[in-house]
Length: 222
Image 1: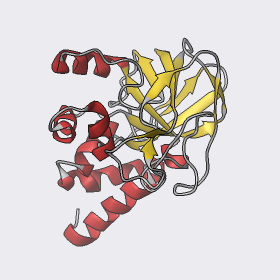
Image 2 (image 1 turned 30 degrees about the horizontal axis):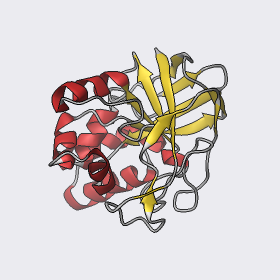
Image 3 (image 1 turned 120 degrees about the vertical axis):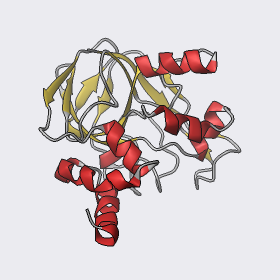
């Protein structure tokens, strides 16, 4: 398992976002050399965990529990075939493009060591939004991406440090529950009845996702 690319984005003014910053950092590009990853701070106040990477809309993105977004190159390849167009690393706004890692099949709370220093923990799935759709320019993109069921994962930083393209990715902890990124994604989008199951992931689950699951249980039961 390998880190193919480390991708960062700069603020770009676009018409398809209502972010207070007036633009987006979703257009991420591979960078050469090491990039430091660290916990950025609370959501709403701080953005990306990667040095040099812009998160323009702090209302919905960034913060400690969404410090890093990872996506499998294999999923990009599948979308290339589906869309009939090339998709470079970073095309979906991911910070880390991996090879050989079942990102959407990872369990919430799973921990990855990347290179010699960094340890990240899976917290939740990525949810497609208006900015993502505008960036890709594909008709019905939010629906199509949701139906695809391979959203990639948000991660929090457990141990900070530097990463670079070519680093190995090692799963150093895999929880014994069955709450995967893909299952959590379905619970947040098309299959709300799955929400109670996501609580098995415990404190590792993104606080907002955990709150949504608890609200569902309070209203509808388990």
